[in-house]
Amino acid sequence: MRDEIAFVPTMGALHAGHLELIKRAGELSSQVVVSIFVNPLQFENPDDLAKYPRNLEEDTEKALAAGATRVWAPLYEEVYPGEIEQISAGLIGELFEGRHRVGHFDGMLTVVHRLFEVVKPTYAIFGEKDFQQLFIVKKWVRENNLPVQIISVPTVRDADGLALSSRNVRLSKSERESALVINRALSTGSREEMLATLEAEPYFKLDYAEVIDEESFEIATPQTEFKRGIVAGWINGVRLLDNMAMGSNR
Ligand code: PAF
Image (tube, rainbow, N blue to C red):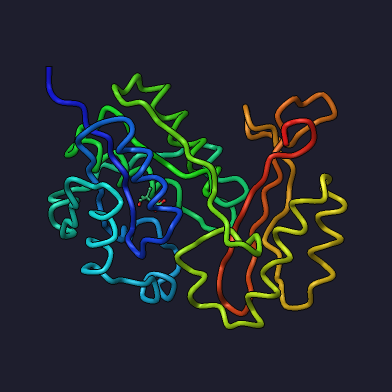
């Protein structure tokens, strides 16, 4: 039997949220592989891809300090050596985040498929911060009977409540203040209150705010047991997203 590998796929720009994923990986296996690869296929906006922070040396140090036993930063050609086998995220990949970032989830799943092919992990660790991504990866693994267990880790927040994200470094002090509206909105408990809170912040440009059923990712109904608020939008050209358990699920 091959040794078990706990795998944390990342695009670098590691922050405390990633380090939690790496620590969780270390609890699952003595072999912790962290990949660092900014996957062009999941960026629909070339400007966002160009601006994505890259600092491999610092990231490698952080990953090793958090418990990675191997940091793998492949070149594009290693990940995509020939014709790319495109993986479709299906209908769910076109909703919410997928409606605003066309092709994003197909690109994400295509790279996750390739990374899994190379790393062959027993466990793969994903953050709840990208809740739709987590849902899509879990669904794809389940439907394809892949021999990997998807482990999720709760979102890490700064003391002010802002969910950690590699994009936060692009926010000025006052933009960051404005960004806190997302956390306030998600803490309200209903879609109407979420929308009212978000609309009251002049610097926030809304993409979507919904309450979904965690188990199906459909819009929640009064009967839904596990509800989750999901929000995405922009502060001065920086895209932010977050989610939170709602109602009795909180
Ligand atoms: O969540 C991310 O950082 C990326 O979507 C992932 C899973 C590393 C794939 O590029």
